[in-house]
Structure formats: C-alpha cells, structure tokens
Image (tube, rainbow, N blue to C red; front, side, top):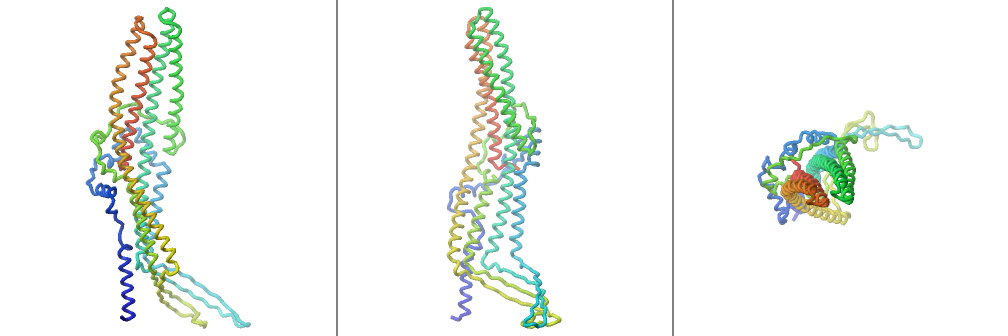
Amino acid sequence: MKKSGRILMAAALAVALSGCQLYQKYELPEDNAIINNYKKALEAPVDSSSLGNLSWEQTFTDPQLQTLIRTALANNKDLENARLNVEIAQAQLQGAKLSYFPSLAFTPNGGSASYGGSHMNWSYTLPLSASWEIDAFGKILNRKRAAEVGVEMAENYRRAVRSQIIGAVANTYYAIAALNMQLEVTNQTAVLWEEQVKSMELMKQAARVNEAAVVQTRANLYAIKASIPELESAIHEAQNTMSLLLNTFPQKWLVTSDMKFNAPSELKNGVPMNYLAARPDVRAAENKFASAYYATNSARANFYPSLVISAQGGFTNAIGSMITNPGKWFIQLAGSLTAPIFSRGQNIATLKAAKAQQQQALNDFQYTVLNASAEVSDALVSYSTNARKAEFLSKQIDELEKSVDYTQQLLTLGQSTYLEVLTAQQGLLSAQLSEINSWHSQVSAMVSLYQALGGGR
C-alpha cells in the first residue's frame, strides 16, 4: 500500500473513532428506570391550567400578598444575582461560538542594531496575522454545546430562585397572619380570664368557692399573659424576615386576618406526578449532567491532534537578512498539526476524572427527580390531612364553647367545681390555637406544592 493511502486510511479511522462519541449530542440514558420515568414525564402532554403552570398571581390571590411578592421580585438581591448569572452564561456561549472564527491580531514591531560601529539600520514590520483552528475532532463543538447547556442551567436556576422567593414571601406572610390570629385569640382569652378571676373572687366572698379556686384561676391568667410576649416576639422576627426578603429596612407589614383560603382545585383532586418534570431544579440537574457529558467528550478529544491554519501578511523593510527601503508587502501561509505524545498519561487521568464527574452528575440528577416526587407527595398528604384535621378542630371548638358555658352555669348553681371550669377553658384555648396552626400548615402545604411543581410562571 502506498504511503499516501496509509495516511488517508489512518485519517479516516481517526475520524470514524471520533464520530462514535465526540460528535454525539447529549441524550438521556436508556437503561435507567428513574430516568425513563422522567422521560415519560417530559413526553406527557402538559395542562396549562395545572398548578405547576399557573402564574403566581393566579395561585396567590390575596392583593396584599401580591404586592409584597412583586416588591420582592423587584428588589431581592438573590434573584438579581441569578439573573446576572444568566447574562454571564450567555456571554460565555457567545465566546464559545466565536471560537469557530479565525482570530486576528495586529502586532507592529521595529528595531535597530549596530555592529562594530556600523551605521544604525532601522527595520520594521507591520503584520496582520490570522489563526484558525479546524474543529476536526469536536473540541470546539463540545465547548459550544456545554456553553449552550450552561445558559439553560443558569436560566433554570434563576427560575428556581424566583420560585423560592415567591414561596418564602407567601410562607412568611401567612406565618405572620397565623401569629396575629393566635395573639388575638390569646388576648381575648386573657380578658375573659380576668373576668373569671373577678368572678372567682366574688364567689369566694360569697363562700361559694375557696381560696384555692381564686389562686388557681389567677395562676392560669398569668400563664396566658406570659405567652403574649413570646407571640409578639415571634411576630417581630417574622416581620423582619419579610423585610429582608423585600430587601428593605425592618418595618411592619400588613397581612390578612381572614382564615378563608381558596386553594386550587388540583389540591383536592390530586396532581399528576409528571408535572414534576417542569421543576427548574430538576431541569437544572439534567443540565448539569449534560454539561458533564460534554466535558467528558472534550476530555476524549484531547487524545486527537489539533489542526491550526495560520496566515500573516503586511508591510516590512526586513527581507531575509537585508533591510530595504522602501519596504515591501509580504504574505505567509502555514498549517500545523499538534498530536499529543508524552501527555497521554495526563489525558487518561483527565478522562477518568471527567467520567467520574459525569457519574456524579447522573447520581445527583436521579436523586433530584426522586426528591421532587417525594416533595409533591408530602405536600399533597400534608394538605389533605390538615384539611381533615381542621374540620375536626372546628367541631371540637363548638363543643368546647358549649362545655365552657355549661360548666360555668353549673358552678354558679353549685353543681360543678372550679377545676372543671378551668379545664374546659384551657381546652378551648388549646383547640383554638390548634385550629390556627392547622390552617397555617394547610396553607404552607399549598405553598410547598406550588414550589414542588415548578413554581409556576
């Protein structure tokens, strides 16, 4: 076989080997049950009216809350940094695309030399040089594809941060509302207990109860009053948290005092699990895996030669070893092929590390998918269980209110003890606070589900 034929065969073999992997575009693995379920979720039709695709204004309809969310989205520095990360990724992609074009440089130079007292001869060169790397083995292609994935990943992270901010504002808003309700109930109960203390004192004077009844009633009053500063401190901290989310100085924010909350119908009818594929953190995890895939391809490409074509042209008066005036135009063309020889061991180590990082990214991706599924399930169960709990607590409160009235009447008639009255009143306060906690847990579950399904639009 002629030497030229062997060279062509070697070149064809190199291209064939590289084509097996180096030019392949990223695809999800086929032999993975978790990833296959995720692929099915991606392929499933998406309902635009689903909770995961509703805008946050459609999900959170409270006007005051909407105002706070808008302020947070406009001012929050975490979201601003996430937006800037998108711009950084876009700039890196632009740089990767420009790698396909030749690089140009203008490098004028001049000098003079004298030997043995000879006359100084000035020389100069005004060259314009161009260098172009031929992407024969996908090095530039994989860098560009990785940069494209980087833009998608930055955008998904931005969406994730946006969703977290919306959820944090909503959770803080309803936490303040719940604390305000608890404080109001506690203050009202304290007023009633003050009246109860006075009643016990009058009944003691009438020899209807003893001193123990008065002391026990007064002690319970102090216990209730002692919980008020704790609630006020919690409200103050929650207000400061809201101020921080809105990137402003601490101040008091108005919140709803209405326990009615119209949840989307999906929370009552169930949510298809395939909506979790819309979550920005899940998509970002996939982007990270894709980026690792292209990094592995780039590591493989290091085993192949680099082909660079360069050209230089300009005006100079240095022609060979002579200096002529006036100068003349010149042009030079060259090509270079650089093949790794002694760096093979380093390239093998780099490829090993890239493969390991790709497997790590796949593991993280799988965990993110499973975690997303668990969060959706947890939020659904939490919402439904707290909804049922709230129904029972409401009925319990009705019965306890009757119990308080009955025991007070019986005490007046001498047919009950003060301990029964105290027990009934304590039970009523506990149930009222539990109802508020259950309402808050239900609302928090809805916020969690909103985030678990991707944070909407």
